[in-house]
Amino acid sequence: MKLYDLAQPYFVGMPHHPSHPPFLFSLVKQHGEYLGPGGNSSASDAIALGSHVGTHIDALCHFSCGGKLHGGETAAEEQSYAGGLRKYSIDTIPPIYRRGVLLDLAPDGPLPPDWEITPQHLEDAARRQQIQVQPGDVVLLRTGWAVYFSDPAKFISEVHGPGPALSGARWLSAKGIFAAGSDTVAFEKVPDPGMPVHVHLLVESGIHIIECLNLEELAAARDYAFTFIAAPLKIVGATGAPVRPLAVVPLT
Image 1: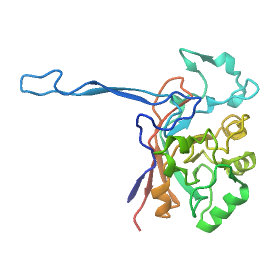
Image 2: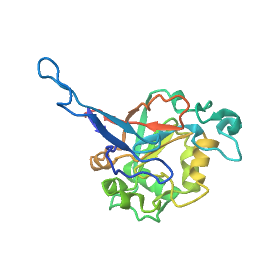
Image 3: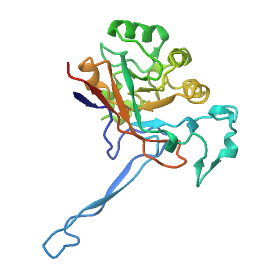
Image 4: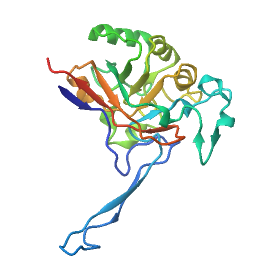
């Protein structure tokens, strides 16, 4: 089998959406500070980060609309600073083992920051790749922006980036998929203060969103259908969590 790592690396100064805390890292003990009887020593470190930083998956409770979460629960009644969200939090997502599909929207290079991925673009990519999106799939959209991840200013671009708008999101939800992901920081076309794609997928449709994927190797190999495996950190009450997704393709 062929195994593809779809996660981006974590490093100090890495890109992060300005509404979320950055990734912080430091050694807290260096080799040589404490020595064992045989001359042994250890080093250790500490990290801090927002739950929506780097390659991560959104829980359904990440967004609400009109004060309501997915399923109609009142958000204000289900949340606290210490406990997080009591409904649809990240710890309720079981390990993901599903069919995955890559739709490559950028075969000729990264899309411009103002590019809207329309239903026609999605249909054309599926037809070109001879792939069908099926109910329960994890559908990954490649914009080509993963190549900018090592350049935080370019990757964030003051929160301007390509992605689907509401019509593209409705194309995805009509397929009955489990999750949608992309290689950008916001998945949907931004800026858009209303975040209509997040509202439609998470709140209205119960479809998870995965962001900041690295889809370059998968696209270069033209492996458009695969087994998608991932498990978010099991943080009780959290609205999202880092995830390290894998694509598994059997050898033919």
